[in-house]
Image 1 (cartoon, rainbow, N blue to C red):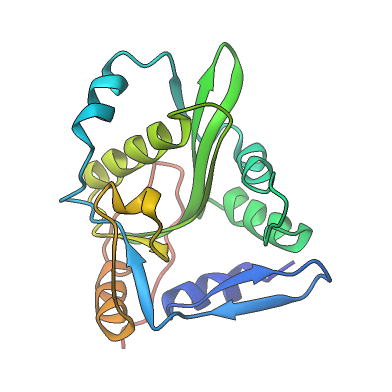
Image 2 (tube, rainbow, N blue to C red; image 1 turned 30 degrees about the vertical axis):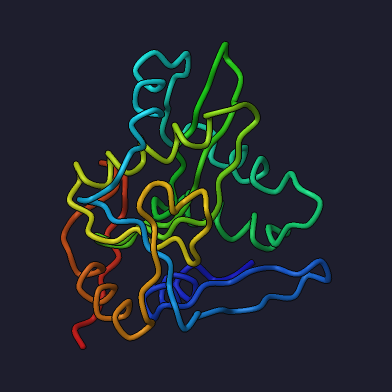
Length: 200
């Protein structure tokens, strides 16, 4: 397991880990960084109409480990046992969170990530039926805006994220935004733990 303080410190410097099947880790800090605007978040009009009559129930932090395992349900995954253990520990201490989409008592989709100050680091999402991951992502963005976050780091940009306004910025610009965001006195929820960031 990665030490929680080491993992959080890495995020504060713009780095994040991914696991390999042999149990090793690779650390990344891309030259171009994907972000999803919080205040200017774009919900496609057609999906917004669907969302208003959605059969889903959205919950927070009730099945964090299940969300991670759902995200790992693919042929190739970087969510290894080391990653699972490390992020579940972050969740236990109030630094990692999940948005969960439920229907008829079953988990149908979700997204999880790490929150430090006003920065949320999205790690992965999954869907077991149409619109579930989009529903989780949209409710997550609304919560981030409501709680005063200014950065949602998506690591890279995918077509799925681009339809919600996701784009990439140079690493130097990202680091400036990151260092402002992590110092904001905001939290993801009332159980979140503060992570004090030393002034630079």
